[in-house]
Length: 318
Ligand code: AMP
Ligand code: MG
Image (cartoon, rainbow, N blue to C red; front, side, top):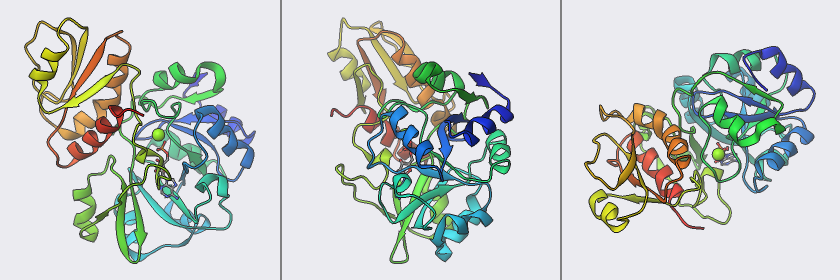
């Protein structure tokens, strides 16, 4: 059921059921983070491998001490600057946090989402919400209540409708090792913004077998339609001559008779706007029964980096 009624969401969560929640990044598939049954349901419904940990969503920074047992000064500074907001911090976990949530890691990922409805819901609950994105494992993340419904239909009893997600891409994930901040996942908060607060950040070298963060798997965020990423649209369009081609373009439409449909991420060339449109455009292209989707690589700066990261994973095989 799609609803704007927080009471229905609250009841379902208290009863150990799952609820799709709106956030400023993407819709989350939420359950009581302290309930093993609820958390197990998240993995089952998403068909998510158990080695991919979940993010714990909390209502206030004061609540952090119930989730994490060590909060480095750098983490405190970031929480102060960016919460509520699209930044997830990976911290040493409190013993109350079950291994199922953290995939057996000694760390827990935590953030305060910046969406009025979900913040109100969290205020009314006496437990935090574990939530990955509300999509089947590996597919495009949902940025509207309708996207969530399209994936799960009535398998999910409550979808709390908070409109289209403002940022439209998952949170940026930062961890801390030996007093050094490490980027685990590009996201809606540009690295440049984080570095203004705490200085240079190291990039995590990723290992596809045991990812530190689920979004780090090589293939992820993927449309069903075969998708390619390129710097050279003209050549790739020519290569697929005669086929039904859809384009995912940053700002300037392409003149071509071969193309069935073009999704423009931001005609003004604005990265924030482009990020907020990315998954919606991918969902739309995926429904057009195309033979191929060709995506254009963005400049490698600010949220262009995040968008390129998602497009690379969307276009990987295997
Ligand atoms: P999703 O937003 O659907 O990808 O789900 C939650 C995200 O939280 C995953 O992508 C992981 O990257 C991240 N995450 C959760 N727990 C941890 C952890 N202990 N260490 C690193 N990343 C984590
Ligand atoms: Mg996800």
